Length: 440
Length: 174
Image (cartoon, rainbow over all chains, first blue to last red; front, side, top):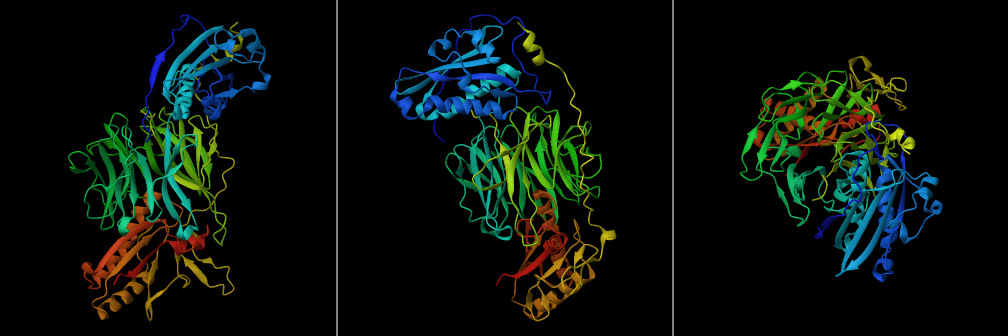
């Protein structure tokens, strides 16, 4: 990955915040998006900025990020009354209120010592205050990341929650007929930009997952027809098999500190859970049941693990201590459950549910109570959380006809509230998405 | 001044969900009670019994009268009489060809989560391997591999396709 040099310099805020300013309650669900005016980023006719269309691009990336969250709408700039550089210093708030802008984002760009300097200010048009401001300095090619970071700052300031726009998605890109599907690992920015294939498609690859702290992915590869868990360093492209196991290893996931991989090992028809320390290479067995134990996921504090097992006769969700003790079933609303994933906030477990011929993505509390089904479809599975625990991505498949045509697979996102369901556009079919933490 | 912000002041709202009850298109789960699904083909032969494919489409031969695959019921790895019969033929063939080594591929249909289906495919391949061992075949001649739902033989999304895809396939490796 390109090296990022970045400096954050907080602007001095003009006032202290002491009374009602714009803010959004994102637990509310189906509410009207907050209208924001996002102005162009002004500069001194710098040719490099003009050539790369950075002014308009930054604005579009920020605006698209915020709109996709479903919490904000971006007002068409044709409606702007004030549209000159002066607004960055002193907006005419009455003009912005007139076009119903609750918030106003203004900015300036400059190139200094071959670096791009971006300064932005977020204004509350009703309180007539600057409520956020920052200067970001980076290499010119990094304008996209800067834009995502600004969108994150705005989201954070207006919702009180951490943003999730400066993130990436790794997934399995799929091509070809169903019975001869070619699958490759692919990575892209959360908004689909900077798309890149990570493997050639020669080997079947499945279920990639990000390391929460390093530029690393763990996944399943059928290299040499031996399905095993692998590690891929995103920066160097180096792949290595994880451990030396006597059977298929699969369903890998990192521990929250990124130092361990938890996974299933299948031996003689029985799948149990194991954890391997990536530094010491010590392997520990966590479950020992004659049933299928798979799809493990750590709690964010690393103290507990949720997993999928059919030990009770059907696929259900269990939790246990991270040493394998106190195994307990938590799913109990009827139907089959799979792919439990612990929320980064710790309070919820997302899952796939199969009930009466339909597939659901849902969430429940970690004791199994409070089950909420967010979306229903013919086939969908494998939720992955946004870094702030507010959005889930998963994949969905369409039904094929008897000739096998009509099948497709794509990644979707949905808010924890059950609203704002969106398809994530990918160059080819897509499955098994995993969402990164905020990029460091 | 703050009037327009009243919509945005912080509520602690518990969002209640309609649980999709109304729109549920009920697809009956495969089970013993939905057995004997008749084929729609012109022969109108019974092709699925108790959720297990009993037809001959997709089946290839390792040798004369030695079918290469067996079929399973939904989410099951138990061997039907027909499956045992096929495996007995495979065992006989393996004994007659003492140097032959095989791989047993375990497969699942698309109606299950990917990771669980990998485990299920492993179960099916090993159920077949275990039966061959009871027939006197050395485990050193048999490897297993699970493909989960990754390699369907029938790309359709219907009961017949799923039944044909719930299988273990014996492949000669030398």
